[in-house]
Amino acid sequence: MQIFIDSADAKELSVLAQTGLVDGVTTNPSLVAKAGRDFFETLKDICASVSGPVSAEVVAQDAETMLAEGRKLRTVADNIVVKLPLTPEGLKACKVFEEEGVPTNVTLCFSAVQALLAAKAGATFVSPFLGRLDDNGADGMELIREIRAIYDNYGFTTQILAASIRTANHVKDAALAGADCATIPPAVFKSLYKHILTDVGLEAFLKDWRATGQSIL
Image (cartoon, rainbow, N blue to C red; front, side, top):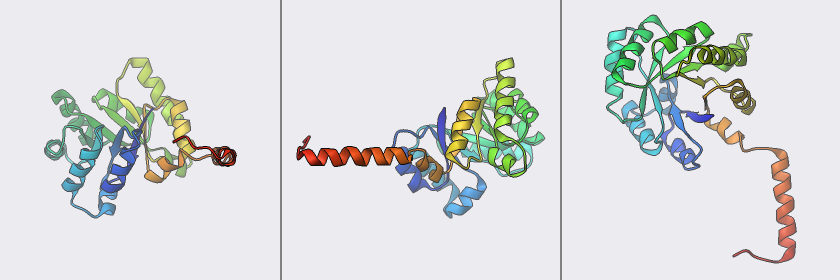
């Protein structure tokens, strides 16, 4: 499963990219507002440190303006993915971009039939929002399983990008459910390394090694 980071903090993303474990980045208007920097300068900095897909979202509500915004976003870098809302106008724009060879990420997906429409429109990625579904009493992971089954039934190539990830267990469950990618906040990414038994075991090894009085270098 590909791991994307959901953030518009260019400095932190540059550091995380150095792990070699970051496959891409997703941004949205809320994250850009939180970063407090110029949108296009932020995107340039992110694309300079992350070679994989970087989703940048349009804010227009009509297809014609979405297309204009998306084309401008694509001038920033070759790895920009145009992020579109799962609305009738967003899917119209998605279909045009698919015909032009422009990669897209259709976002705010909350049902399997929405994901079916996104795939038919030619989306490169579809982003089902797991955490928000869970917050509203639904089962986000069941949605991933449903989308996976539909896409496999018909050979759709749209990638399932699990979004609104809250915990390391969300990442695990999304991988088990068949998501192609998960986009996660930096704090959740850092938590993936953690297990109490890893820390305890490492300390025991180091204690025993120090007792030998030896050095590898």
